[in-house]
Length: 206
Image (cartoon, rainbow, N blue to C red):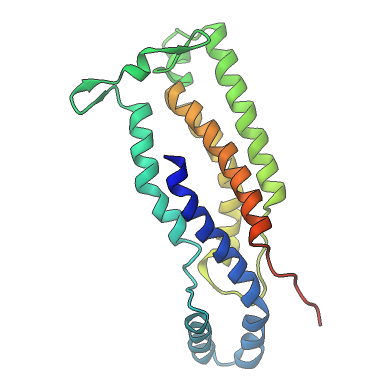
């Protein structure tokens, strides 16, 4: 199922590459029309049309993942699917039940050494991957790009979201937490490969 999202990742990598390539042209437009916001907006949109892209291109791949991810999470969270018991959640991993979350185990008094060990290992991996991702793909504003994805608020959110997965993992069943761990590792490797395939334009300073 993760393979279905590879085209989405490619699309996102291309969008990042396009934004970096257009940055010099966007800076030039701002220089020319900084006193005329309406003209600047018009020329900016015209530039995106000319390049066959959109200021929202970076957001579309993210939204496109939602249906697939929603289906996958259903397999790991719901106790029954189509009227049948979800047998996956009846198993365990090294003694930790796949159908129990860390939070429910703690407050339910069922947390064992295995529960702490397995969840702890997964959380450490997720946090480590999040930190590597944040450092390697640190979001930086592209000068001259006024698209929503380049706003300071969006860039701060994008940086913080790397760690949100680890927070979310303590509230979902172990099966889902395991899937989240695999997902963040897969995503990091995929982004590294795609960044090499679609490198960002090198900024040229005047």
